[in-house]
Length: 270
Image (cartoon, rainbow, N blue to C red; front, side, top):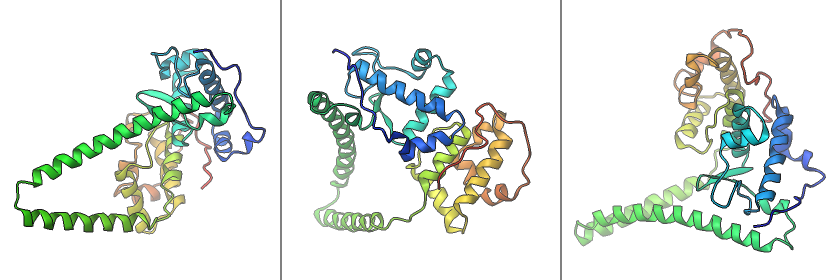
């Protein structure tokens, strides 16, 4: 497939909230350059937004670092930042630029857009089918009971589904995403704010009266203390946001030398 010789960049791109957040990060300018290079590579490979070296070989973190002539850790930090900001995602072990169409001339590349839509739809349908298979197996096991018990179970399921629906309609307004993005940017990690266990821990602390600023203080203190040491593996939601949260919040901060990633002055627009 021939490569695309251009990509569209809107003139107010630097007013975009995501780009402005990246600019506040240490090495933010370099990460933005990596973003534009990714867009150019997508146009060059012309695979509908997928980062592909050939029709069959997808770019890996190490391959991108080599092509960009950048440190692998920096490229991984950039890619994790783009994922957390919903700028890219991984589909079938391939990096895919979300909303790729807005960087293209839609009138001239309708076929690329349609192919991308079908590919993404197929991927999501596959996930949905996998979930349906699991549910079908569970229902099949329940069929060993008599008809009346089946009816009772179906009624219970209906009630549970209604309860779930009601809960989903009442957002708790807790900034899970902002907190986890700050953690990832500060510690060079790649945790997802949508993970149930992470959300439960954050919600539990909010229910105890802690604030977003308290989370930021804990992340700052423990990253200064543990980053680039054997304790770095504990810079994770499970440890930082668990039962010792208040203890971490009130501990006296230990001043250490700045760590490799240089994220001491990261600012997240809460």
